[in-house]
Length: 175
Image 1 (tube, rainbow, N blue to C red):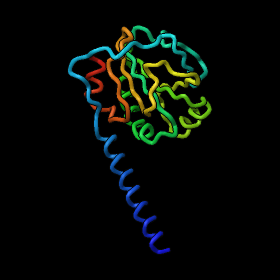
Image 2 (cartoon, rainbow, N blue to C red):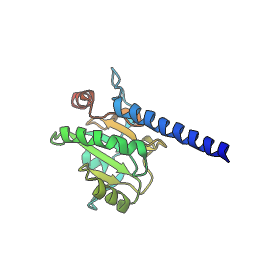
Image 3 (spheres, one colour):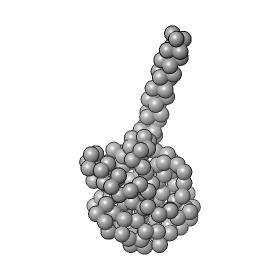
């Protein structure tokens, strides 16, 4: 019995340490942008998303704007850890008429709405209860895509990052 308790205790300590290391990793590392920009694909302008206020629109609504698209979930630890960085980035660029931010979850809008109410984020959250277009169809949460005003996806990041780093603002403004 003591041996079992010791194994459980050691396992818990190792798990806690692993979580701490993982948290440090994604909170401190900014995204690594390519030196030369190339197209990874094109935004599906017919993809329909719905705001938490209930207005439905296709991505064609955002045509002519640079897009910062973050696919996330309320149950995803790395997603939740990067949200404060994303809020800071959004606050820095929210008045820029050339850039749109889309934070998209495939969870029910009631789940996302409840999460937002509890956590007081002012990010533009959307839900998509239907399948995502192939280019955005990834099993990794969070997943972030950056597209030019012409709709070309030029950056894709699977996993979280320190999005409030100055290099992110520089990259977005330079597109």
